[in-house]
Image 1 (cartoon, rainbow, N blue to C red):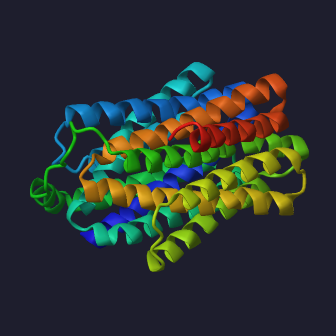
Image 2: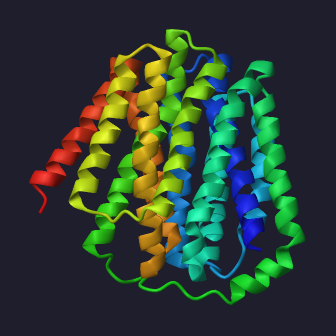
Image 3: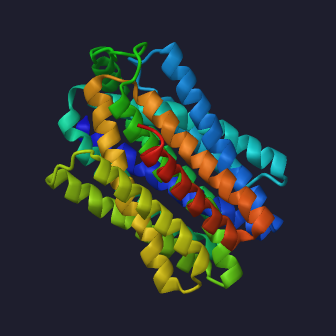
Length: 359
């Protein structure tokens, strides 16, 4: 079953990022979407993801059930329907609903490792390969036909459903025997709060970049395959760093905290200043280093201490939707390039406030 989980994680991650990159490209092409509209698009799906992962975390609805089986077929229909939508309202509604579907998928998959924490590194590699593959082919599919990424993303999700449905009985029996999550009602310790907030900061950067960089790149004149390649570099570096951190165990310290904040600042700041593809490759990929570090430390800490994986995914969702929304709003008001620069300054202010004013 472990190998099947890795395959399913790869397929849904691929599906997510094939469609994820194509959403801003599609909105720009079909509706001439502004930075604010792109920010809202990134906000809605991630907002519903965050809200419902938290609701499920508090209600603890059937945690011993393989929800990813049901989620994968619902995601299939959601991605397929996006090509049929002719207005913002229904497009945004599907994104909102899809966030709910994912809110059951990823926490359910992660719950598989409740008794196998040593396998988390392989899980990270499996889904991160999916983000690389999905992001890479997305721009090329979009260039061929604008609807094609949504069709391929839907197909990948459907294959995931077929695989999981075939093995449903095995998964159902396995999940019934998994341990309960501990400390759900207990106050989260200070150490865990700090690394969760760092994880939020990193996904803030990724959320803003994933949804708003295509707009910036289109203004410069980058074609969709080049945009796809640049964003792929981020996830390729993240995958490589996941592999390194699986071999070299890195502990969370104040030095690590500072380095991660500075890397996010540098990435967003220079993304908004430069207009050269090679440099965008470099500075956007920097996010991959910081994100791999914060995500790995966070998920291992959460599982080891028995906190809910839904809570961890809620933090990630908050990062995604605030990043896309804030960069989108700032980009709408001050211009897309300044949107990235001002967001980086916001990250720096948060870092300085945390470092020198919060003890």
